[in-house]
Image (cartoon, rainbow, N blue to C red; front, side, top):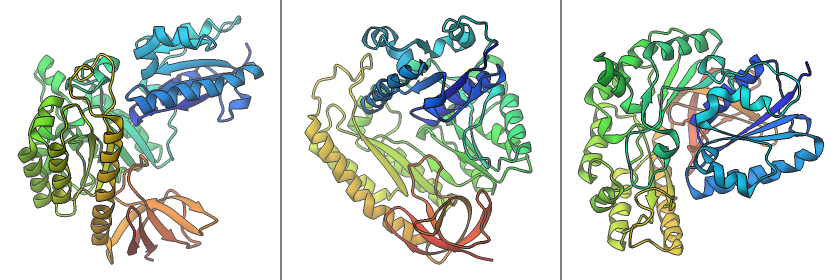
Length: 440
């Protein structure tokens, strides 16, 4: 049997990255050779994103670019959310692609891949147990559920990923134990709705399985240093969760809480639970219980019906709350979502102007928040070294590894090793990054 080389391009979020790791792990188990060089690959797999317009455009452009490798004999295989959502249209528009595999067909990945070759290939199993981790050897993402039950009017995730489904708690704990045995120190828990974890298990079995019961098991694993939670739905953040985070040093006091807006009117149009007062009280409660907590959020500007008054409410709220990290997007009009046919759509020019204004406000808030780190010591993981700047780059508890937050820029020290944790004294800050030196 011929040995095939396969390369992967993973687009979109960390949940998609885990899918890519599962696919590549299954291929590796089936004796495919994994390569990072596209021009060497017999197969190029593009795991696409189909969440909003910009991510769809990136996926399409990546597919088009990769078609050039067909001249080398490579087969182009496209998977992921864009394929799940627009399979028939993609087949018509880009017939040069050799194989389309939507998410719903991952269970027969090997069977579909076999159709590209005349010789028999081993079956490819896309499963969590076969993941080929692509993140650095000290950090991994762990997906604890998939899908979503929150029918936000702008969001296509339920159309793509389906209803919310939790993984078994014991399976997640076993996965983290295996990661710990292999040297991973930082675990980032991810999901479309992390705080809803266990809802379906409780409903179907009566077992008391929640995010807190899961965390209680993970913190027992001695080799794990950091546990970070990404994407916490506001009204599902319980007092029990806040208290547990405040009393467990392994769980980073990092609250990623996408609020999307602050105007009660717009939140209602978005079908978001809770209102501005609820969100403000929640954040105040977190900061009261955990004064050094990091609060990250995301916003959508230019949602249908967003007036100048609504936008002013949003700006005032941001200035009042002072998020440590804030991402914002212009509203993306997505087919088959409830907001698609809403009246009072906001012009693109206005959306972009509002986005720029929000990010300019946040720029100075981030600087103000970063100043709180000055002259304090933090444990940091060292991730890279830049010869041009003669600096190391790393992260403290305040920065997630998903390239959204800033980073800690550390003075050169010949004794520093990549992937290791060091105490770093912060002596300067800018709008997004902080600067420090290792304390011996």
